[in-house]
Image (cartoon, rainbow, N blue to C red; front, side, top):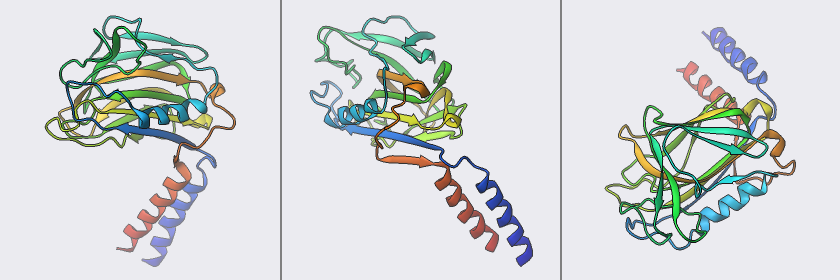
Length: 255
């Protein structure tokens, strides 16, 4: 039995040794809690700080504010230096009369440039109801999400094409609308070519899904990542994940 255990752990070590040595994704997150479905937050300091930190890690990128957009899915967006992103699944552009109102149930845009306030309204579900595909692999993605998790569940980004398959957004989990109108920023920057992403599915941890406002979207190519990118405070490392997996394997084999 001891020989069998040693052999399986050795195989795990071999798999661990074959992983990229510097495969990491830096993540950026900030959230401003509301709980008010009728009035937008006037200030979103935590979300803004996270967005600022994310953008500091990129060079020459553009941000889609949706202010000049209209229509429904599929919607193709062009970003300087990074190609085209196509928004698919259920979703459409919503325009409100001003930046001082919501749609009545906690959703609104956060561009705050005066006049109307426009955003993409969509649903993240258990089957990837909302997805984004990229014409070229990208290394950076960030967005504002409004009214997420107000009826339970967390947002999850299912990544295609890279070495990391799933990122969990640590949004506040509400119930019965308790976190209506809250605003968050979430973004990630891949620092290794093996982690470039070709598409993203938006999922939730609950089966009922979550309708939310999606605004201020930024994507960036690997060439647009700042060589001196500042750490966003949370680093997902395949090296660390493999060590954790190895420990789990060893524990199971001892049973």
